[in-house]
Image (spheres, one colour):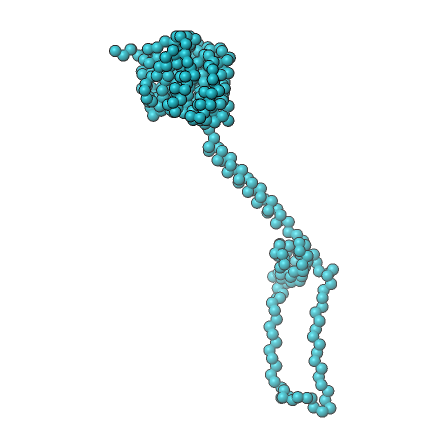
Length: 329
């Protein structure tokens, strides 16, 4: 049977044969009373006091009668102490330790599950990045002509966050890649929602901005884009770093750079983009490994991603055709 020590309060066990007796606690070594069972219902409540006997006729007498001996008072009974070695030692109830261990394990699992749940709810989605964070490494993907993919809100398979500024290198070195770059931007804008905002900046000898303010995304923006790209052609030199700084003044969440060459002060530009809260999505056009490495570094330092397209013209041939618009009068 199981009982509790009256001294330390811990649960102990003792054989049923000792019910109604005493035992020694295995924890504090104190002698404690074992409760009685239904089969041995012993009552250990205090005995009631014995009522006073009525006064005898001789209550007023001061001395016994002559010749009669005085009745001696009986000596108080001395309790018989049970030898210490005869007090049975109770057993520890191990379930207390087991319950403590189980509760501790459950608590650890509960806390771990809570942390994992918070992480799962707040983690970025597949392919998404958090602006200004350098913990998300960029992904360099080599795409051939068959690598065209276009999902909503992406450019060349990389996610965008509104508002977005597209900066296209429009120098002479981009003559073979200008049309593919323009097509990528058009496909990306067409896949966005009308509530998304975007802007386009051509980095040539003179920087050309599509509009003075943010434009709405969606397919309805495609005619404006197509006519803007048709008015310009690449040539001469370009100050791509100045164009990037000009784009950052608009406070975009995503800055897309499409170029086939490297540029100076890349680290300073990445730092400036991170401070402004923008992450860079780099699109390296052509087979320049230096340009691909530059885009990777810019993306990594701002929490963005990068992609390398070695053959942009073949990519354009495999891309779905875009509408052709007549020039405005």
